[in-house]
Image (cartoon, rainbow, N blue to C red; front, top):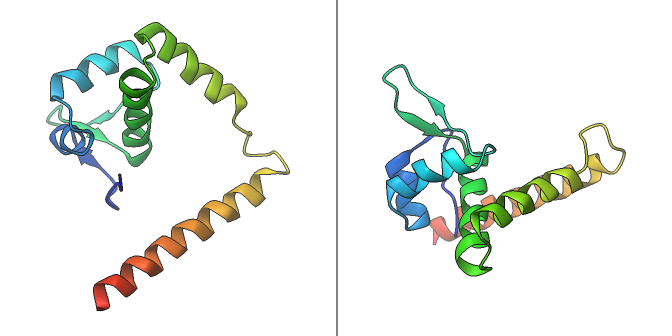
Length: 115
């Protein structure tokens, strides 16, 4: 699944992307501390791209891999602990690899749109 290039997503947009009901996302916010969208002045949930990616990971853990809520919460903690800190020497290489893959994807999208 490809996540659109936007700064913020409303809860309905995230629910549509993940093919879930909005109440499921609101419930996950209570169960997974890592999933915390910002709220606008009108108290509307605004998900950042990282929140959408986290919700996608939670959905995969629960629905495809069969984790329980507690098990998925624990797995997210393990995943967070195994990520490299920003100051790690290996981190710039990983960052460059991510940037390269993003640029390749953008170039492909641009060439597809020109046809």
